[in-house]
Every structure is written in structure tokens, then in C-alpha cells.
Length: 326
Ligand code: XMP
Image: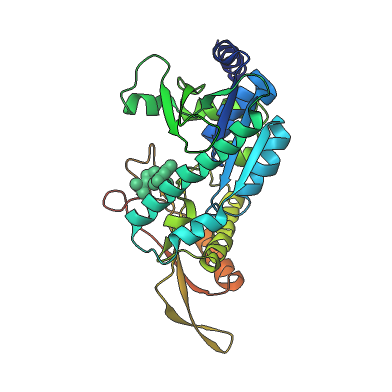
């Protein structure tokens, strides 16, 4: 019988069998997959799991808090927070090329995660079993796509820190390997995770870093976060979350146009709305959002976000346009 409850029970049992008294760590991204994987493992092994959240400062409004407060409140999971906002801002300083941004964010993320790993391994050392397991939120479509078959896989992590072995072999725990996205959401709801996490639309790992067209800095991030929060809130209020696959909100940081507000001339930045409908993100069509909704989002963003004087709509399908702008 397929119910979210049965799936959760079965996976929790499997995790207990695999991990036993061992210890595990799990990275949380703010997304649904890692949150559900972590919640399952937490149910199975309790405080033998340490969750790691690397805050790269590129998340949207409220998302870091959803991990740091709401996820912990809902699951009781032990969480290690690495506030790495400074690291990412410094590494991204002045960088405008999209692929370079992605590479930098990926590289710094691995460094930050490994630093967190080391801190956890040291804290856990001498408290019983060593940390041997790494939890990952791999879904069934990822398994198929990478041609992966049966069997436990291992992942190697390099450390160059006194007191720890240089190479650590983590055994992977992948409780979502047989599940599709909608099943993962159902299991997450069954485990009592907040709707903001479970119902979240896809969001790229590099986050707002690739939704600022131009160099990334704190001021631009703050601006984009405000515009994005307004757009998301209005989309939700209009009841269109299920119809729209995702709606990237993009800041054209190096473009300015002339505007007028009250009796002032302005010279501000455009915000692009990129709402798309899609089945799997491989292809997409631009969403025909109601004009009233577009108008409301545009009015609110230009009134409430300093530095933005124009809102434009992306009416390009994929192909030829990708969903994200970078
Ligand atoms: P594109 O822009 O290629 O995006 O049409 C397709 C889907 O993938 C998401 N995306 C990413 N997700 N890391 C991720 O986890 C990434 O680097 C990344 N880049 C794009 C995008 O939001 C869309 O859902």
C-alpha cells in the first residue's frame, strides 16, 4: 500500500539497519530534498545525526531562517550552522562571468562544507562511534540520469587537518533513492516539515548569485531579495504556486534606465520576472500570468524597492532561453 506514512516507516527502518550506532552528517541546502532526507535520518538515529547548514548568503528572504529555526523546530535535529556569507562575497567580488561565478560558488561551497565537517568530526571524536555516514538527498531521477545502479556508494573527502585522517571515506545514506519529487514532498509533510520547505519551488544551488546579472555584492543581494519576496508573495496570494513551475526574479545590475517618480527623475535598475511552466525543467514555456497580477507585482516592486524603477517580463520559452539567466 503506497502511503507517505508507509514509505517513511520503511525508509527509517532501512536507515537504522544501515547506520546502526554509527554517526552521520547531512548538508542542508534549504531545499526540499536535503530537508526530507535529513528528517528521515533524524527519526531513525536521533542525535547521532548532525545536520550542516552552510549559509552562503545567496538564499532568498526567509530561507536561512527556515532552515535554522523552522526545520530544527519541526524535527528536533542537531544543526551545525556555518555562517560563510563573508567568504562567498569576498570570493565573488567583481566577478561577472556566469560560468566563473558558478565555479567559484561551487568551489567555496565544498571548502566551507569540508571546514564544517572537520569541526563536527572533532566535536564528535571520542564520543563513541566515529562519523562514518554522509546523507544525501539523491532522488530516483538523479539515480537514473547518472546511470547509477544498486549498491552502496562511497564518497571520498580530503582533509588536511591535524588529528584527522587525510582521506575520509564516507558511506552514503540515500533514503530518497527510490522516490520521485512529489513522493518526497508527501513524505516531508508526513514528517511534519513546514510547507515553506516542502512546497518550495526549485531553486538553483548558486542561488541569487546567478540571478544578479553583473557583479554580486551585499547591496544588490538586499535589493534582489526584496523584489523576489514581493513577487513570490503575490504569486502565492494569487493562488498560482501550483501552476507556475518557478519564477526566477532577476536583477539587471549593470543596466539602468531613466524613470520618473513623483517629481524626481530616477536612474534605476530593471527587475526581470521569469515565470515558467514546465514538467521537468528540460523545456519550459513562459507562464501567461494574469495582467492584474503582473501589474500588482510591478507597482509594489517599483514603490517598495529603492533603486528599481522598471519591471519587465521575460516571454521566452526554453529553448531558446534557459530558465535562469546565467
Ligand atoms: P536552466 O536555467 O538550465 O535551469 O534552464 C533548469 C533548472 O535547473 C535549475 N538550476 C540549477 N539547480 N544548481 C541547481 O541545483 C544549479 O547550478 C542550477 N542551475 C539551474 C533551474 O533553477 C531550473 O529549475
